[in-house]
Amino acid sequence: METQRDGFASSVGAFTATVASAVGLGNIWKFPYLAGVNGGAAFVLTYLLAVALVGLPILVAEHAIGRKMRQDAVASYARVVPKEGFWAVIGYAGIVAAFFIMAFYSDVAGWVFSYIPKSLIAAIRGTAPLESKAFISLSSGTWEPLLWQAGVVVFISIIVLAGVSKGIERATKLTMPILLGLLILCDIRALTLPGAFKGVQFLFEPDFSKLSGAVILSALGLAFFKLSLGMGTMTTYGSYMPHTVRLVPNASRVALADTLVSILAGLAIFPAVFAFGFEPASGPSLLFISIPAVFSKMPLGNYFTVLFFLLSALAATGAMISLIEVPVAWLSGKMNLKRPTAVLITATGILVLGLPATLSLGLWADVKLFNMGFFDLLDYIQQNLLLPLGGLAIALVAGWRLPKAEFLRELETAEPNKPWYIPVLYTFIKFIAPALIILVFLNGFGVFGK
Ligand code: TRP
Image (tube, rainbow, N blue to C red; front, side):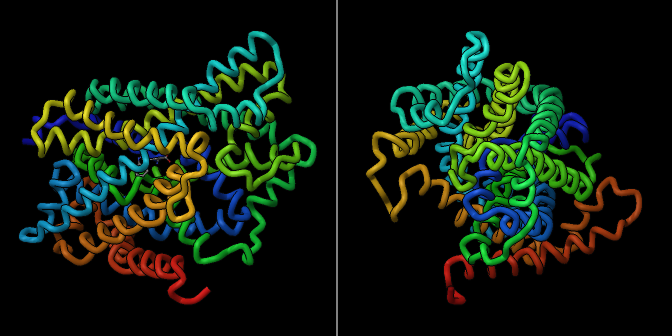
């Protein structure tokens, strides 16, 4: 059976593909804007703790279950504990989450893609860099964002049709290091702007009065979103991993690399926000306003802006491939559909949900459900409900329903001698991560009082 499934060719390929799923708009768009809205360093610190104490253990658990089962996420959870088929609910909830995320993610990705030609035109004409006005008219428009979004979904569908190892591995091995280099260049410029230090303080000097139950819950949700956890993406990726991969070191490197990219993005954005007098809490527009401003203070700045959004588009592509792979693997595996049919159905579903999400920022701005527009509602549900609860269920399966020896066998694969970190990690999966998720969740919804 194993030989018939497509998979990652090597352990290096498994690492880069996992990083490619994790690194995306979450690092350069969501992390900075949430840090800005939630008051800076205290949120960042909570986020770092969430990654280490909850995210990493669950990443390992997902990889282990995926590699043990070698099936799509729904089938993996349906069969992982014999006679307890109801765990398949993790996989089904994951498919719902994948659609919710893709609906707004493809809108944001559309903005990023559109900034490539927009900044290129500015560069060639030698006009002023893009300003907040340009972003507002784009994101609150009707046809323009919808067409970019549709273009993005078609583009991703074509890549996914090319197959797992070929499509994903090749592209990202090349582009990730270039993105990293460009971010560092951006950091150097931003940090040397007059007044930049205020931005560094904002990111690293915590004011704990800014923490509330809701803020802590969104930091936890962001940790799940960032590492692509809680919905079967990383289980699916685990199922593609060869037995040469040491799961704990691999996952630790992924979490570290991903967090580094977020911090580098924060260090590019916040110093500029303070240097130029922008509003740190300005929300989803933060990336699109501050990056062109940073580059405008550099020779050939408009060209760097083009390159930045080009590489961001590639990072978003890697993440979207991993999102779309969850329903596609399920439709083509369990439902026995041909891959092109599975991709077509998935893409159509994304566009059907994506249309009201995109329009909720403009034409339909007045339509509110639970006090939120549709874009915000989808984001809220996936981040604060679906992903943390999915992660909790995964930790419970791995820690409490699977025989310990069976689970540990996956973690010990390819390890020369039994390393110390495996029992430590197991304790986190079994006790600490689930306890923290439950506490943060209840606290986030005000169960312990405000
Ligand atoms: N981690 C990606 C990002 O930060 C988004 C993403 C990809 C994702 N696959 C996922 C989020 C699965 C949650 C679940 O941009």
